[in-house]
Image 1 (cartoon, rainbow, N blue to C red):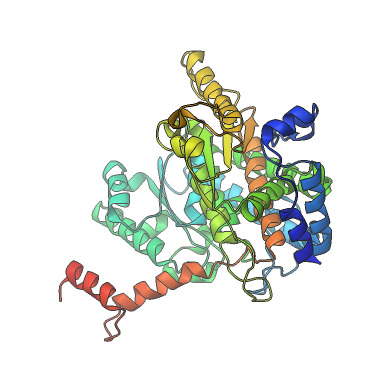
Image 2 (spheres, helix red, strand yellow; image 1 turned 90 degrees about the vertical axis):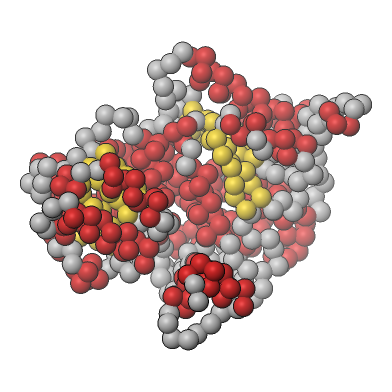
Length: 499
């Protein structure tokens, strides 16, 4: 049944965007939805009544509603690892026991924030947060978006094992006033622990008598952190059922809560919870994450678009495209279905993007006139993040809105070099302001959208075994047991390190 429903979707008439607007005076109303202070405009996509109804039939056939309930009820939907995926419980939606456990751990985190703020553990003014992947990218994106510039602590988030990422932080920080936060789900992440050891060595060299006394650990394996040397009173656990790229709602958000305030972190959770309820309660034709996934799959499977571009027309949201790359490509970059069979559909598109208006002078040439059809997503904010002349922010917003209009309508010309074909889709997401609640709702929207895409594809979005192979190869290269890789890799190793 599922394959025939997909075939029906693929054979629907392909109506141009301008025709959709010309034949439906209610299109903006029907495909413009608002939730938690965010307006989502899907009207410039090729979704119409027939497309949405066809996808709704598909969701009934694959049991989307049951899988949504399984997600929030704590069932082991991560079947390859036999685990639940309980990031929603961190913001109060899910199995009651898991929700209460999350609240308890949040209270513990808040208590530690208060202790550090009081100066009881030292006169800290600077924080180094070490992690990688979701243990760093989520907090870094949140801090970039929400910081005001007058915070009590200077926060530096370092993920790369490249010493050139860590050394400049050490050069400008003062060791005795630095709190080291180590974020690692397993507390075995090689890059993070190497960076952590380098920070501890720096502290010792700078005269800190007890460097480990300035460490806080964020982990799902507290015993491993204790073995590494962290005092158990300074370990903030989180549930092992919370995946790394979904973990910013857990104690992984500690550095943000410390730098920006616990109330900011709590507002983030409130906003995400509002989107959770919208996702669970809304009919699919008015359900923002579901409609977004319908559009994603329409372009991936029907129009065979291999990429999706995301452009933040606000400097505060500049890291959102990077955040989405991990969320979507690590979750849905799979080639087999839940039962291990080869995937017959296209998996996650390649997610890329940048910041407007810079991107207009770099990559928009391809978007407007290139041979690739690339669905575009615009992120914009009504309230400016600066105190300069309104001309700055007004110009930013007008450029954003104009790009979506130009992609859709194009411009015909007898000169083929100056012809813009148009009929190129975009979604615009317009926030009233960049504040914790709306940002929490936005990120929860992206998580649920990613989940619905996975259900439509019949894949598991909660494992990431593809991340492991490169690590294994690196360990094999480093080993001095005589093992060898391919001739090309061995030659590179020889040229870098000598015979």
